[in-house]
Length: 345
Ligand code: F6P
Ligand code: MN
Image 1 (tube, rainbow, N blue to C red):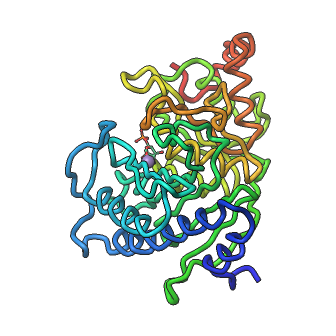
Image 2 (cartoon, rainbow, N blue to C red):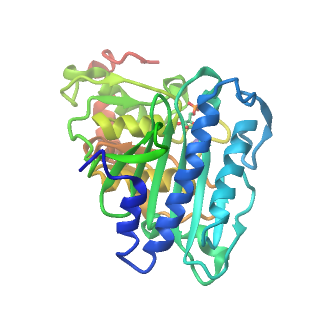
């Protein structure tokens, strides 16, 4: 029964299904074990004396907090005890080779949204599990379609694990009393009725025309081509946005924009966009750069960024339509319609 099945039992059943499944199950179990430790740290606020402290910048220039590094160390310690051929992390410049004979590789963002940690908002861990190729130097340059499993953990009011093993999306919640994750939602499907959009609107002046046109359509609600009203949310924490979309539908956009360094958006392909795209598709949604399916992409470099539009498939497709059809964009941006735009320049 849902609510009774522990993650351990769920993974035990799964591990008997395919040759790679045992290794995948072991890695997910290791990440879940690490996540319980990270939940204690983040949930302790200032008690563990680590929150909000900035220690430097990661290889990609993002501010790195002490907690980012602690989360990275916890997960690597847990994964080191399992057969994993290579590990890539947002916090490490290069991938690390582990057990060369192992069948899988793990890419992770140990603490996503960590800029939110000192304001007591939801943060999380994102991971992607890939088959280990013979040549480990190309382990993290595989297409997103190669993923064997992907998931994320949210450290918020609840600690929840969202998981796909390539056959739907299931959600587990940490039962703090027993220390076990329990299956709470099975085969999650993203609602087709998209009533919320999420984008950092402070960047509007830097967006390109199709993104502005899409957001104008959302803002126009029943008075525009979308013909229904939207609510707006921006949490600034990818895991929390993804969890919301899985729960009640919606669309999330972190597009490319004209700011220096944002030509490919902000989010990283290997350990943010790929796993999120796998989860979205497995839940009946979509994920795109606005032009291409995220899962069809293979990273040229480990920390490569990519524009990410994800969530309810009709809205993701609409952004793609607007990107591919300048005439459509022109009609959406026509003067009559533009008068109704809230963020008109
Ligand atoms: O990992 C990057 C991240 O923190 C995501 O969790 C979030 O979606 C995004 O950055 C927020 O970016 P910005 O601060 O530019 O709105
Ligand atoms: Mn992140």
